[in-house]
Amino acid sequence: MGNPMADAFGDEAAGDAIAPMLLHDAAHVWHPYTQHLNAPLPVPIVRAEGSWLYDLHGRPLLDAISSWWVTTHGHCRPEIVEAISEQARQLDQVIFAGFTHEPAAALAAELVSKLPRGLTRVFYSDDGSTAVEVAIKLSLQSFANRGTPRRLVAALENAYHGDTFGAMAAGARGVFTHMYEPLFFEVARLPDPSQGDALAALDALIDARGSELAAVIVEPLLLGAGGMHVWDEDVLRGIRARTQAAGVHLIADEVLTGFGRTGPLFACDRADVRPDLLCMSKGLTGGVLPLGATAATEDIFDAFRSSDRRKTFFHGHSYTANPIACAAALASLQLFDEDSEDDRVRLEVAQATQLATLRGVRGVKAVRQIGTVGAVELDATPGYLSDIGRELAAYALQEGVLIRPLGNVAYCLPPYCTTDDEIASVYAVIHRFLEGARAEALSTGGPIDD
Image (cartoon, one colour):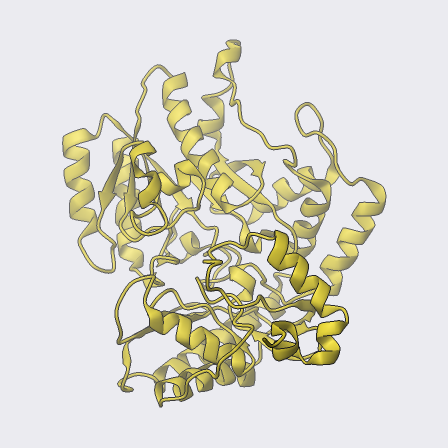
């Protein structure tokens, strides 16, 4: 029987550094979104720069998905790396209950200056899912604290808000969540605005249960993991008008859409919408360190100010407002200057140019774009478990491009430093795949289960 390490990487590599890495991984690591019964060996990455990842042999891999949508300015930006290094030498971690520090205070002030007007308070957490949990809990408890409890949350079909329980409850029902469905709280479901009349459904919900409805949570203008569905700014404005009139909170989950992905810094800015709560993570630190944040209005904050200690927001994380992560976020925010805006505009044009070449191509059902995000819906079995996504991911990996189709929906969501030629190379891979190219047998298939 052959040695799979040698087959995959050559005898020298298998006997050198790479073999222990993969052996330890195979023996002890549980990877996310991975079926370990038949998953190929993971791709061993040792460094990154700009839009590129490099494996143990120095082979480059174009990161066309910003390493799960997080890397904004590019990998290992010197400004962020230096900020992390400097902060680590000064203050690495301190409890954030009853204590504070300059990076967290400065970051909160900087975020408030850039967020949609009216969001004045920032609560730090660990990631996007926990930022959503915080938003839902803040909404529900703010009503209860004022003696007018409301417990119903409304969300969109095809939504994804994270993998913790509150976030899963707000997300669409499907392969991610069906096992846990009996444990979820009630969520009223509104149509995906790209597929149905969400405003009419919201009108009906408010008429029937408005006094119970605490919040409507949306991924503004782009439903990400649900298939990169782009929806209209007028609908977002309509949701905001209706929730405001009914005294219902609007929660904007900008974990994906924030920090320039849809064009402006936040998707809500495209529609001139001011939510009551806004969730951030992913690009918050430039994609370098984990950090979540939930921004709230002063009105929501005031609902927790009380001489009754039971009205405290009893929520926190061990690493809340970690100083090093906050320093990274501050450095990242400083990079959103005119040059960054020019890069994002250039990326929008490059994506539009490449997507136009796929319209009407055999095997393509639809193409979609918002800001720097381009999506290609393949004419194949729909849904997250569609085999065509795994096939395309494996072929792209073989061709030196990292993409992770969402079932039959492939997408390009690159770091902002990605060049036009690099964008063209991503779409060239998709073209070749549609023309009949397929991956050779690979011992390392990389992350093709998502």
